[in-house]
Image 1 (tube, rainbow, N blue to C red):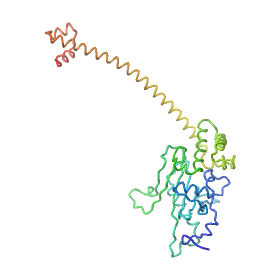
Image 2: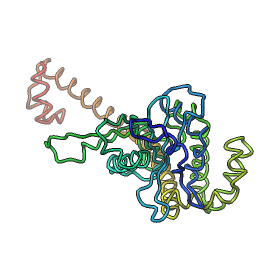
Image 3: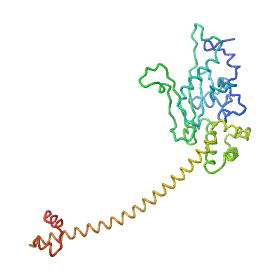
Image 4: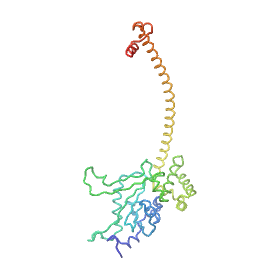
Length: 329
């Protein structure tokens, strides 16, 4: 049996199946479980144009018995000497760099022959890439990164780091990435439909049923949704905390309604404020005009020989008006 990576068994790695074996998989993982889907995802993420599916090797890990320490999707691109580990997240998790570190160790371990690490000759490893696809309900930017080094105490000398690329795949975000993969863009569109329907009063099962019918009619994920049918409901139950998700979607809709109401109220308030402001301005303008007119009369009276005392008595001039008039003369 030949060895690649100087200790990884090529035949063993090709024959082993690390894919998820749950009866009800997540819908996200189902979409990319075939090599064609993995290849499409790789090309979109790394702006490549590979066409040979035989270059792809599924190396997704899962403990079938305890279902601990599993990742959503991982695959190796032999020609590029790259391993891509991905996770789909509906809630933010800042421990993803640590989790990926643990996944990577298990992935390498499952790909190697027994005791390979004890051999004197160095094992040449495929370079890992770590990717998170986020489609939760927090308003996040399109792309950001997480680093393992951020988890260590501030000021500590860190000898290891791991970078996780996070892509927001909510519908309307990362359009360039989504345009390059029909599966990912279809998933984003499908989930957005479900969210929209739930926000507008539909129960979850009803929302999924409607979204499935509409997507099939529109040519979005037609083959996958037609094949799965009602199984999609069960898949979403494993993909999201659905009770919490629906609660958030409806709360978000309520908040959007409140904000629209507030905005409308603000507009009306501004319009009313402008009208009141104009009225007050006119009133104040009149007062100022009248005041300036009186001041002119007092100045003319004093210039023509009238005394301050006479201005007080005859013109009813105040002390302030007299002071202003004499200062401007």
